[in-house]
Length: 487
Image 1 (cartoon, rainbow, N blue to C red):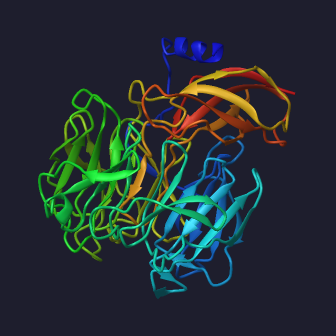
Image 2: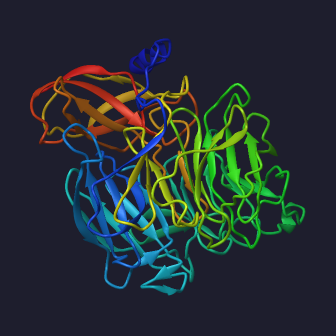
Image 3: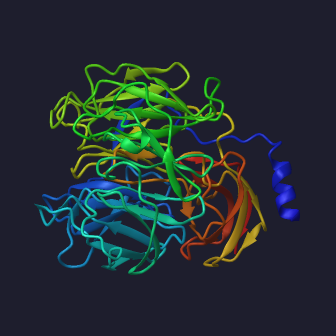
């Protein structure tokens, strides 16, 4: 109890978040991957996991390790780490579990290059600071199709998986599932789940939903284990079922509890959900752009970066930023992937540096350096239990506030999930050398503001003894720094 009282007092202290010290947004490239890669996941030891391209070997994964000063541009690649034979998915469901070691890949719109909405899955086990092994994971009983269905890691740490029908299931462990609540519209296909600050989960319907009034503007949300009808959008945002990304953005003067920015699919429209009033309003008109599947990611400065396009399977993509305060969309600088690509080919995920990674099934990941600054009040705060740690020690405990951040940060329609709302721990010495620990087994996965929690962490045995500044990084935003010693 005393520790939690200390943490509560720490709320009074100001917190300085990490930011990218560049006056204007720009892109830099990362050391090319061994194969073309697409979806990315943030590992809990500071490394980046990337899936190979269907045109290469979609059975393989590669790991990007930052250089000695924590930069990813000049990082090194390891792998391949191959999933079980016969499973080479494209457009699938993905998650890093709270234990940090478990990575789940489920389904796939394509498998081995064939469109079959596979029900196969793979369970990855990460060796912290080391390699990755994969074994097959059985689907929920009675499921025949998963395909590109979505998932969400709930505030209580439970993992909820959808299939292309209306069904969901909770993951219990290897090859074990429990039936979850079915959604209200005809199926999950091509929709997406967005975690909300109160622990609920939002889904913007992409089909007519008779249960919620047969509206083509309906939404629903998961509350206390049951799907219920939600507020209606101001316009129909889908055509042919495709939707764009839905990103939960940070609180601001106009949205004191934050909001969700939903991009239209094959419709030139956007909508904004205000969390406080739980109502939708019109967002900026993105014409001529649409986002029939495509990525969005929240920047530390509060803007939402989006990759949009001119149509379905149409080149002419553009990077644009949504400003939740001004309710405006403004084009920003493109990397080499635009305008040659469609929106669905892009993947966006924030890196621990506050840069946003972008890749389109190519060997090169580009990092977006956004406008500097961190939204006030969103950075995590840490209170260490002790100030001296043994090198290579495991299961150290770190308490803090907002260790999971205030948003999943990254979104992509239904086809990929790359949430980064969990703490990483970073040690930096006086020479600027950076070493990440391995965080795991958090006490909660809540993204509610002011949440007090703890995470466990292991220290990399390769970290030299010495004095370090210890810091948690969540969604690319750094906490206060505490001086510690590693012996």
